[in-house]
Amino acid sequence: MKVGDLVLYTGFPHSVTIKGDPFNMGLGVVLGFDEDGDPLIHFQGEKRPASGGVVYYSDRIEVVNESG
Image 1: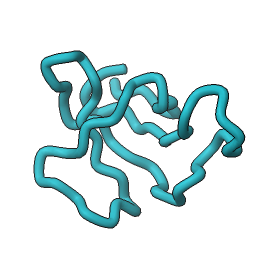
Image 2 (image 1 turned 90 degrees about the vertical axis):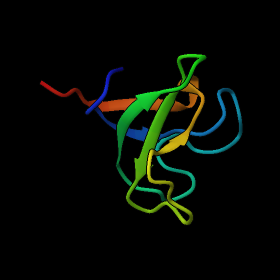
Image 3 (image 1 turned 180 degrees about the horizontal axis):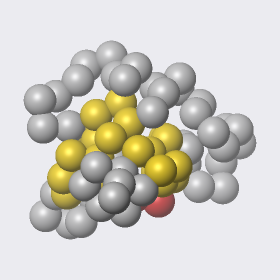
Image 4 (image 1 turned 120 degrees about the vertical axis):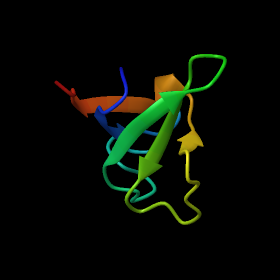
């Protein structure tokens, strides 16, 4: 995963939620990474967007289209 990749939020690993987009956030774009290496992402359906993106655990993110 790198800056510019398009991603989906897949939820918690091994949970009962359906993998895909359990919170209807839509596609997101990776804007950077925090000090722990977790991605800062802006999702199109984000209820409270942050200018630099919101940090998510990388094991809950699926890359759907890698940036060139």
